[in-house]
Image (cartoon, rainbow, N blue to C red; front, top):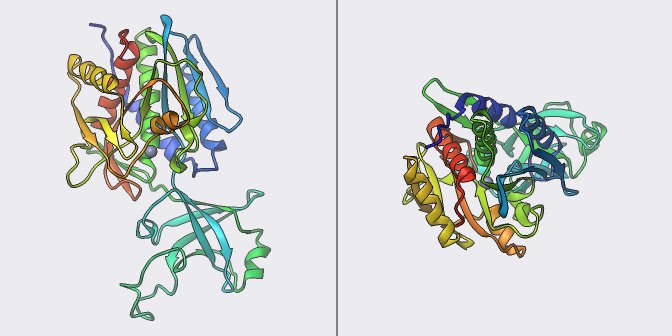
Length: 354
Ligand SMILES: [Zn+2]
């Protein structure tokens, strides 16, 4: 069997840089540029780049065969916030980009970016948050009417805040708080799905270091609108035989996924993935002694689902590394990244059709 070494350290380094690059859904320029530069720096022969009008990055890698072309997708867009209204107090009401618990962002540091790129620091808070003042704050509901952003600037009115250049529609970036521990864990917001894009980076690097190319022509789509459901709906060429989405595995009570395996998602909220793809992925994992779990996510869908909903005809599968407390302050282990890179790399090299 072909020897492959899994480039974990460079993949984690790539991941940390991507995590520190803000990319809430709708704001993709910086992260797409970061990924493109990192992928281009791999200097892989026959890997060519383009961007869709909508802003996604496409990398096309010529394979040994063009008979059954493939697509692989991951997304750089993440959860985030946007200014919904400027309150009379000068503080900001927010609207969510993507879906999450307000409790997951309570007291998080943020950077607000005005349309002309002035940046202000601030904090997401419930209104009147001091327990010395508000005896009901412990149990009061958290929603878009009770949560606000306190900007670190002297503002006492909506006019003061507007004078800073802040307006309805400005992006608010949540601090990712990236930490890589010496026990192999990575804690950060937005491991969904920046870790999946790091898995793609690692698989490209593994093949490049081994002097290999994919078995089939392969188009990599780095999508920028997954969290709102249409990232994978456009960007792939027609006529693909298979599409493999790389997105996080969700952990929790009743779930098989772990932080230490790669997961093959058999079914999610959008329905089952393709039977033959699922079996192919199982076979590749077993042949290469890759620790994997199969799992089902009830409240989840992927850019594989978006591709199918948009009329895509390929056989679709979904794999990904395990991410704990998804859509909150997330955590994963490097083991899961290693096994996900390995499974994707072996998939790229596998000549058989699903
Ligand atoms: Zn995701």
